Image (cartoon, rainbow, N blue to C red):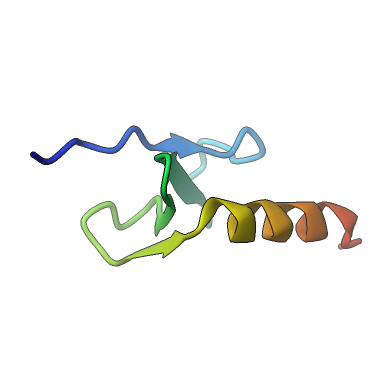
Length: 62
């Protein structure tokens, strides 16, 4: 049985069509894709790995 993923875009993303990612979560994986290429490749991370990445990214100054 296949379940369609519920994708969401970052609240930091604008509507100008810039560089954005979309994320869809499941109990076993966090899926990531390019918002401009919805049928293109996707990455999948274990939830703990994604959480560690998000925590690290929040500490990086741009």
